[in-house]
Image (cartoon, rainbow, N blue to C red; front, side, top):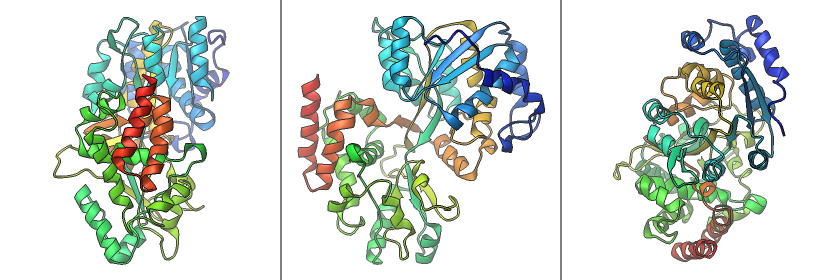
Length: 452
């Protein structure tokens, strides 16, 4: 696929129509209005002229996400004179490797997760980012060093550089509940893990079931439990231990990992989970939150990522009918406020002056605010105006991200496929079914040993 032949007609049309834009609520923007850093955009435009230069981008964003990103690219094109073309693909991971090997890669690639970016850097297919980019991220992103570490990889000579710039994140460390149910029983949102566990036990004493948990997901059954374990690793161990775990620098059957698995097991014990521990593997994760909405409720809480409202009953208004709180950390362990999540990162696959200029643009508060205002986008950029978020729900999730002292990517996505999308999944199903945590961890480690 040759990305350098044509500019995107859609992007050029957006540039032409910018002066006639209505309001940002309608998906477009009136210059000078709204909670956006227009002065920052003007300053950027005054310092960057890329007239006659093209920038090509390949990424996984399609449909509405693609349209949102193209609206942002239109501002860059108008400000700098560059022509920008974005191509979205549902097979981006395969296509970017084919293009790089053929010498026809786009200027920028948007990676859904760090693993592929790290592999491409190791093969010499990515260009290092500017020297001051790491400093910018560390200073201007919440938990900034976490994002630097996630984008830093070894090249073909084993030298480590920053190759990935994160743009858009999502949050997994969330607990969903029905405010009316909490009000009826006099329950308060817990702020520490100690309080969450005490609340769980109080609910059982009151004859209520605290948790709905579903691990079912067809051939991917078990993955929701891996998120639980990852979140609990970050709440029981230093982030460096988490990092050693996902690379197998410490074995899967290390006491720290076994302890995190057993922490998950605490939530499965007795009457703490709807249907009992033996039922969670047979409950589809898409169905598991429905117990929150039953009358009387089958459960009071459900831990899941920010996407789960897609499976709430039709017409549910998040923030009113259902809401969420941060899956809290232990006060006694003094590990800050870690957040588990995921996100997309951008790397340079064919370098140019305008390409680096676009990456500079994406670092501005303005660029983040425009994306925040269109929905489906969370930013750890501390300089971006949170009033730009499209909804109170996104704003609240964005604030969880901004309050993070540590951010870590979904661990199973960073592990080899045979582990993160294999034995870790099945091992957690076995554990929920009653198998010993140490035995499960040893089995997963044996799989890791077999692929080394």
